[in-house]
Length: 75
Image (cartoon, rainbow, N blue to C red):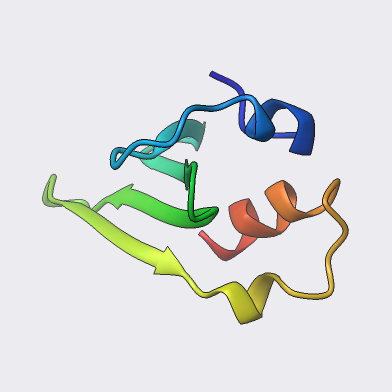
């Protein structure tokens, strides 16, 4: 599923597991529909998967069109 536009995100069903989009080697950004939360996921060189919630206040000031790119940059 796409998460790169406001229109695409509005069509997603709420669920606990985020909708993921891989954007680089061993990196992904996820969107949890419902609360509208953004999550970063990456693999360490040792192969462990790490997760971090992206703080909403760090995504403020962006338009809905720019928020996906901002989440990828923070991830």
